Length: 188
Image 1: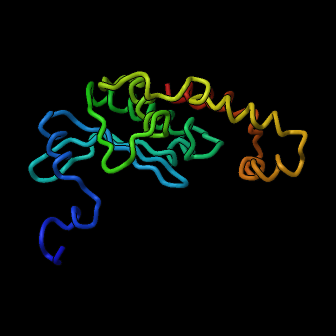
Image 2 (image 1 turned 120 degrees about the horizontal axis):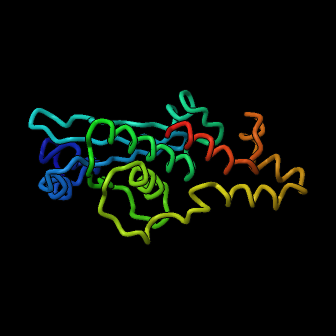
Image 3 (image 1 turned 90 degrees about the horizontal axis):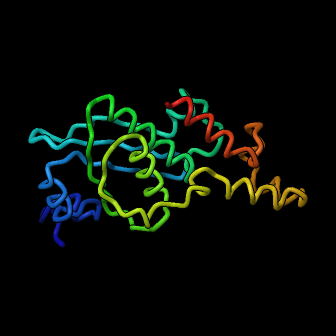
């Protein structure tokens, strides 16, 4: 495509404008989930003719600084907690309903995106979504990480290699479900 033809974000593969128009015609705020290797950011965005407006936002960095999150800021339990925090903030701002805006992200059942959405729903926002796509409760809580840590605990080199980030922070990966509950209780 020649330079200057069409919208720049469409040319760069950053925005699907047909999909965006369908979402905006629903006239509901949209939940946008951005994930990176180290963080998760969730926002509720409302459309305005003068430009979109962020009505509420939550990030995994905020969970660490304000709510004492000790484990990885980009895993499924953290995505759920970020969504839960967003849900609580949205309810305080009288946002009761929203629609999920995936953008160009892939729809993967049980992914961080759906964990974050589940957290937002549990936090009080009504979003139309099938229950089948959410991660299992034991995965949301981090029990699978704790079970794996217990399984390889006797393999000294393997345990230190896999969980070096947790060990540096002075936490045990086997205790992630406990840390998860502590952070969730602080949010409430």
